[in-house]
Figure 1 (cartoon, rainbow, N blue to C red):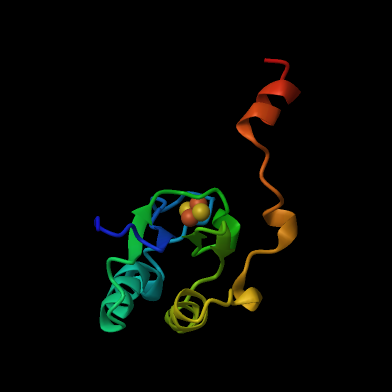
Figure 2 (cartoon, protein in one colour; figure 1 turned 90 degrees about the horizontal axis):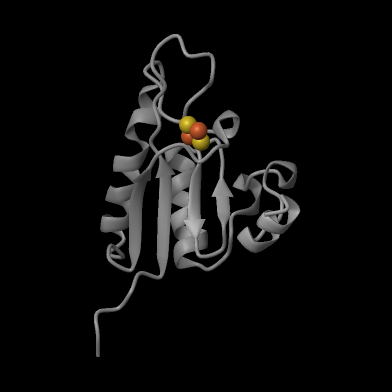
Length: 127
Ligand code: FES
């Protein structure tokens, strides 16, 4: 038997805009908790004994900055918004371990509509 692949990847946006940037970012110099969320997520996964089958990943901007701090969970394309430590606790317990997406933390559908396949996008652009 081979090495098992992860069951989940958790992509936490770690983008931090420089001071003075008008655009919000998921990690802010003015918000200490926003700076701690990735470490908190990793510690939580370790404490639960599920590191390896759940892979936390630091990522750059996921293009939903106004809804941040955001985290994308794969598989499933589940985008969680306005992340806090309490929300991470529930997402790990209910979604990752329990198998039920925490719907109240999921991004609004207007901001996260169905994906367009690359093939369809090329067709739409006449390429
Ligand atoms: S900075 Fe996090 S989504 Fe853009």
